[in-house]
Amino acid sequence: MHSLFPETVLPLFDRIGAAASPRQGVRMTPIEALQLSLRLDLVRLFNTRNSLTIAQFLGGGPTSLDYGLPDTLALSAQSATDLQCWERVITRAILLYEPRLRQVQVTVTPDATRPATARVAISATTAAAGESSMFHFDAPLADLTPATGA
Image (cartoon, rainbow, N blue to C red):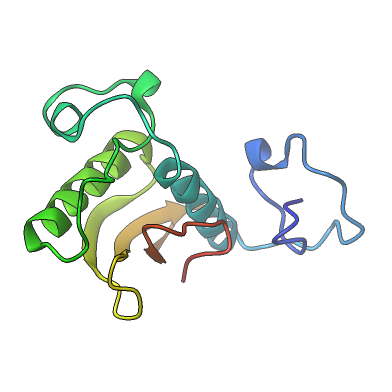
């Protein structure tokens, strides 16, 4: 069980190595478990940096060895051009490394409360147990943690 979500049963790879919880046995629906797994995996993806430049990442053929995002420290949350670049980078990363999401729409905007920070909002569709559902994820790009997400 994940310490942040002790009442849930996580997918196999999220459970491996996790500490036993006294609340074992509480179950989630397949859609709830999938949505939680997606949030955790997106946080991992967005918090991992690869060795590619933004141009290489967007233009080349990244492999599984290039998992993560390129260095985006040079991008500004106040620049419309940079926000569009962030959208392209995040969309490409999701398309490359998160095959469970379909019809992905990424929007990056300046954070109204923190001018130096951008926020990412992701909407997509996903399916579990033959049931399709909408997936939404919203977080500041500078502060992604597993508890983040809508």
